[in-house]
View 1 (cartoon, one colour):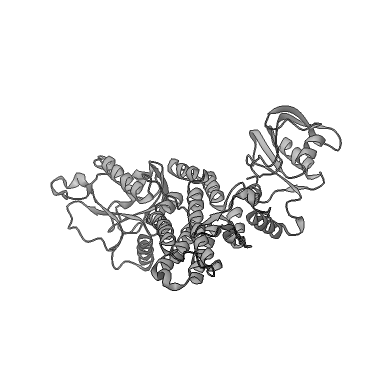
View 2 (cartoon, rainbow, N blue to C red; view 1 turned 90 degrees about the vertical axis):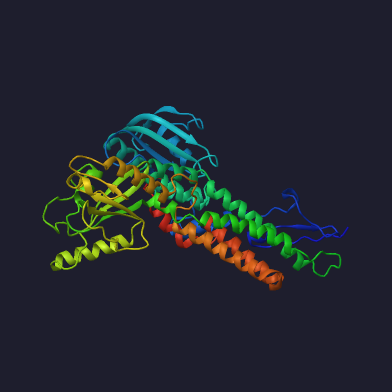
Length: 494
């Protein structure tokens, strides 16, 4: 039996094949391959070297207060790196047993003075958050205790304070998290509502990452068929009809990606908040409604038309969905120069909003909301003054009697939940993720549009670009330009 093995330097070209003399190419089992370094890990280590510069490629040990600044009952100080065991030896006299909480005396290694007594934890790498040896001190949260321990750690050779997000960055470099999971972890930390937290926890648990890996595996299989045809085209008994299986795989992946992309930005809205604008003519009760919905005196209420000159914004939590609710100047022509500026700002805010509450006093002639293309809920205000002239459509409310307010909140909550996708399994929460999936989908559409007439080499290149878009999304390749921005959003100690 004749055999030939094909390999490549890029991870997307590392599939090995055994030609059996038939028209079937069998992927060799992992144990049959010669050992080779994981290019993903090698690339990440290289990124770490670039990021650390003269400080070295994670050869130092970092430490930071993880529980936040200020006086507290308990302070958590964590460390990660090759010197963790040494730190425990110097400060506690021994290294705690891995993954077991131990009450220990923590002393200054220079003079032996007691810093505090507290819980010490040791996590041996690679079975830790960062993939390195990690340690935690859970001590009393007084400023003197925290300052004393941080000072003691800073005196140890090879120790330094951590940069913002550096613990998470090390977890990424060591393959404990991919870039999508890193972004989701940041969203967990920043979540302010139940809906935000639920979505972030799903993605931090790997929901999107697993989908990306499955898509990549399918495209690598399709690319293997095309490249095998290129490599073995000189063999007479090789079946050259790879078009059907390649097309099937590409179509399946494209269909899945398009379903994920077809979410009208719901995930981003749930993460960043749904923008709702209260708009209408002057004296329609916009500021009064803002105060009612926010349950505080956020805006000045006056019978004088044109009181609101600027955008006033409050944050709400509607059934777990964050909402940015904005009161705007009354829309009308004329007015003084300052009011005109307020009207222009109102129109700009409306144009960028997700939903508009269009207010008009009940009994007045209804006008068309002057912003087509934006979702609108029509609200007739001052219903107590025009009980016989309530509109058949829309919602009627009275700030004086409370009539209709509960119904308005119910309808607003339903619309907000629909806009944010709180009732469905959205997967995209960042523009970077949408861009990466769109780039992959673009290459697959080009592949399917041209078919086999494009030539095997060009088809292989399109598949390679599609795979690379997914790899960049998960952080396998080409991530130098986004790492700094992502990790800078994390707090010190995370």
